[in-house]
Length: 251
Image 1 (cartoon, rainbow, N blue to C red):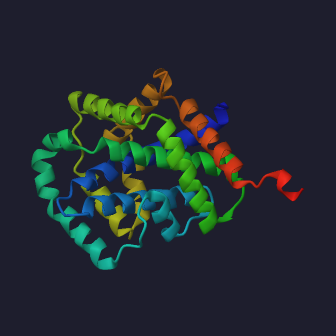
Image 2: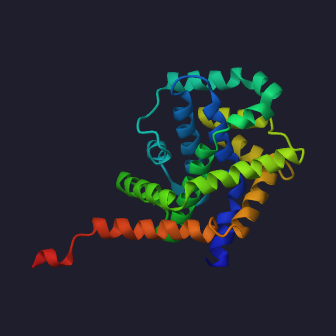
Image 3: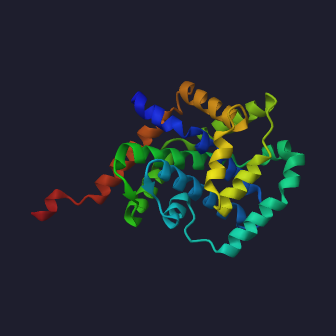
């Protein structure tokens, strides 16, 4: 992978890692379907923010499709999830480290791969400004699903589990702002504040996890940024061949 591309992917890594963790944390809300819907909303929020950073427009409905939510959630359902998350803040403060045991690192890994592949697509394939189309989003979703499967998602999940565990054992607690981060992303009211929480965390939890994730990606032979992007390239080529009609059909 070219160094410029690696550096470009690294610029937004803290935001990607922070909201990937939030997507796992919001899954702890003990309301039927709230975890799945909430995770999809956080992912959609992350994708729209990344698109904006690349001078692209990703409509919220397409971001939801890419993030895994097949249907536009109603305001009442979003409000119910937001209230549930807010109501659990006190509980989180008291037993945040215990809840780490139940942290949904598979959801964290899927969000991290989704955001990484979305950014890689923006940097390497799109190359133009403007809004995403429904057809483009549909193909990109298929490519990301295939790439995530071949990229050994279980290893990425294990990477995050080990990394967060190491950070916590080193004396850094999961911050109370994690719930606030998830809540703000769910409500999608103040995106700038969400980004600021993560970016201002220069020496805190998100920054520590980000540094350790990058270190693991550099030294883990089976899960490197090059391997992840190569999986996307392979999936893209596969879908291109499937969707392109045979040249011989004209004869």
